[in-house]
Length: 458
Image (cartoon, rainbow, N blue to C red; front, side, top):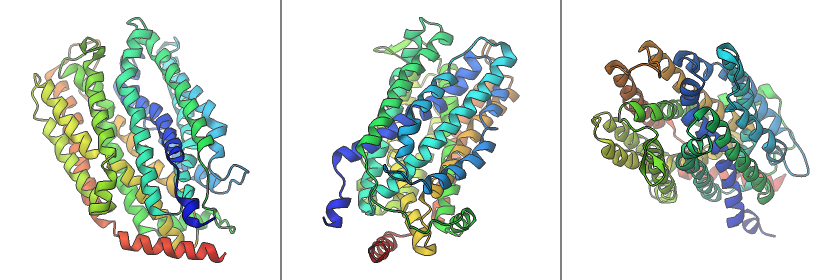
């Protein structure tokens, strides 16, 4: 069978791979979009303590992420190197996701301790299943164009998960809890956990690994050295921290920004959706629509130029929201749609670039460390995700935020700055950082050809 036939992926396999990110983002967006709200307004954990809680576990990630990448790179089973982890960890992933939102009645100290334990366990199993899942994209096919298509399917899946959470999660909380969020949150998350578990199983059964790692698996120290010397990878890691810090600040603060600044709470504003769900859903739909534009931008401008330009435009769109008055909810919806449509292609471009960076590292050093490359990138993203809530917690704590007390003008200004100014500025800085990424499309094609020749000779 020809290499062309082997590496051209079927629609079913691309859909199957994308479903894995639907599963991941059910929790990724569920946690990043609602856990700060849940901790502060349901569990009544002080904002500063909640922000610290969402940051400190990243110290463990600094150890667990590269270890998971190294472990995955060295795994050998009849199912492959990375796929087995989807089978082994799908059920634990769902269980710990539910437990994080279980809301036990343990008192103030007990709730904080429970939150630390369950959040750390969830992030650990998230690492253990998502590092192999991300690395799997690099071994399904050796062809860059196929991996770019795969990345598009992945992020259609990813933002389908985001759309599901945006559209259905809060309505489920209110419906299943009978108006009691303390009851509704765990019940709604139980439904989502079952869905996520099933989707990971489908990813396992519908995908296949084709790129075999080198037989001389290198030592951990050598792997780390190869990564650090991979300049394109270093640039992408810095960009990842900036990207996810900006996104995490917005995700964290958005429910409360909408609630307190625009005055949209649990009341339905359209169909069965409250104002928060409507804003998140329309933004998610626009983001998902933007994902389908990925091939257009990639082919016309190249991955790096597209990523840089779209990131800068998205930053300006976010900044524009700062000037929307309190009675401008409709204007907010429009600007949010525009910003999300612009940002839609960027995640697929990023992860496609990561596979190019992994190829560049193998081409330059002779070491294939796909798992470690992706795990370190994921750690950078999770670091950004944690810095965002920590900033929100510190700012709201300093402003004296208490959900049971009246909201002051200084608190409203804090919500505006965190929802608009800070993420907009970070996005613009991120776009400028990408100027230092110099791996061009022609060079990527040459690297791919060289690697295919090397593998055929071994």
